[in-house]
Length: 338
View 1: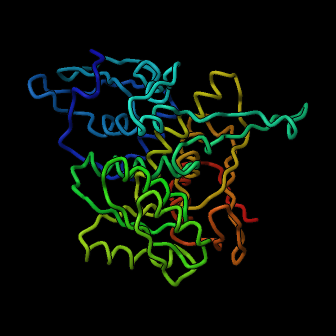
View 2: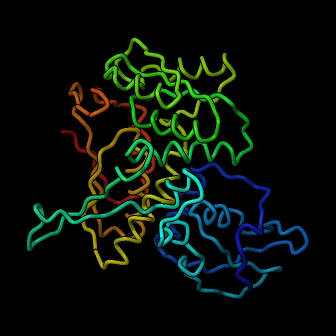
């Protein structure tokens, strides 16, 4: 048995994300790999253990245990030994070679104790996603990873279409400008007009759609993208919106908690497209063996929520379905409305 860089190995079998969730959950829960992946020595292609390889790659480990032939040897290797946390440890001197590195090599974002809300019974900590550089929100992660995922699959594009109410649009416009890609953003009529101005300043074309919710015109945007030969990333149904939070957001928070000996009992987060809360649910309910509660919060039906980038009504339907899908891997989950 050897431990080698995962980048040296390839697999000819691809899995849908839903086919990997059980294996991912098992790895997070046990933290142990007990069987090596069998690899052909000449081609460095996986012969046996395809699903384990795909799950480990999805989780972002840097190394994998392999053997060249079938063996009954049992191993006990932790995720930590395979470089599980290595892609979310920033440079100590905070020097970046380009503006994209300023995003993903600067994670994890700060975790700060809120002393005014803490007492001798419990402590309250806040995750400051506003430290992400482009949209000053968690949506930078989503925009970056959706583009990265498309590029890694060999998708060629020079024009992006996306339905957005603000932050994802800012992230996509900023990253597209860095990459030299044009982006057209479709926004609902209810958001503040300053959003249009800001998006145009950073290089996006903006189209206002005469509907109140982004989810109400997702199909139209997809149709327009096909007509104009553009790539529609669709944050609401793109698996990258889940994967970036599984591999980076959840793992980064876990590392911060672990390094500071903080044992969380509840994680509370707002739910929009549900990408981050569904990933946090899968990750923490398995990593912490059900000793933690996840609470997702969204506005009550028909209620408005006010943001600096505009007002929008509660978006039910396509977004909460993902939370229900991934949360089936948790023994306790809750969606609260306020």
